Length: 342
Image (cartoon, rainbow, N blue to C red; front, side, top):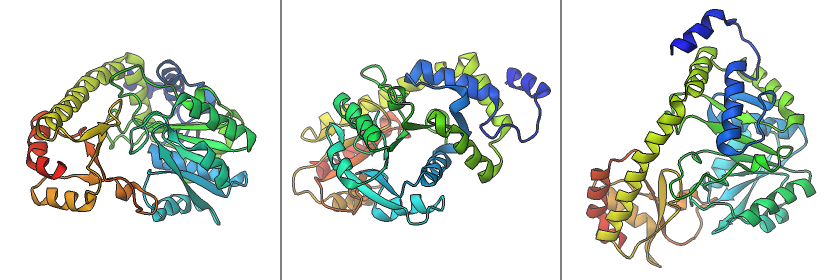
C-alpha cells in the first residue's frame, strides 16, 4: 500500500486513459503472459469493472462489426432468458442468442459451426458449471472455426488460477490473439467487492473497446488500480494465490473424502480446478426433489437444471461448491444428505 500511495502522490488524478492506468495495464499484461500464457500487451488490455462490464464491452464491439448471433455454452450461464438479457444489457438490437452443447471434451465445435453464430462465449479452462477442460483438439478446432467464419471467441477465464492436479491450462488467446477477447477479474482471487477486471482484446479492436469503455463510465477507479498494481508488482498477489490454493485444495479433499465415506456410489467430476465439483446422481433421480429435501435439512445444494439453456432434460447432477465452506461444514453437510445422494 505504501508503494501505491507514492504513485498516487505523483499521478494525475483525472479521468486518465479510458483503457485504464498505465501502471496496472503494464503489470497485469506481464502477469497474464507469465501465468496464463497470454499474448498480452498493455496497449491491448482494457481495465474494466468486473466480468459483466468486460462482456458487455466485447459484445458492443462485436455488434458494431455486424455480429448478430452469439453462441453460449449449454449448460452454462443459465436459461434462454438469461442469455437474452446478457445480449440486451449492452443494448444490442436484434441480437440473437443460440446455445451449443458441452460434452466431456468441452463445447461441441461442429454444433457451433451449424448454429450460424459469429461469436461464442466460452469457459475453456474450467467449463462453468460442468468443470470440463476444453480438449486440445477442440481448442484448435474452435480457433479454426473463428478464422474460417470471420468469427470471434469471448473467453471467460474466471477461475483458472486455482488448479490442483496439474499446471494451469493456458488461455485460448495465446494461440489466436487476433480472434479472442479474454476476460479476467480478481473477484475470485481476492473478493467480489474488488470491482476490477480486464479485457485483453484483439489488437485491431482494442481501440473500439476502449472507446466503448469511455462512453460507458469514463473509466474505472484509478486509486483501486494503483493498489492492485502494487499488489501484483510486490509479489504479494502470487503469495496470496499460493496460500489460497492450499485452502481450497483442503476443502476439495474434504468433499471427496466425505462422499467416499457417506455416499460412495456418487461420482464426482470437474475437480481439476475452481471451487465446485459436479456430483452425478443415480439414473432416474429427481434432481429438484433432492435439492428441496436437502434444504429442509438446512443444507444448500444446487441442481444442474437451472444452468441448462431451456431448463431441459439431462442426467441428474448437482453442482457442489466448496469455496466458501469450511472442511468441518462440508463433512457435516454431506453426512446430513448422504441418503438423498445415494
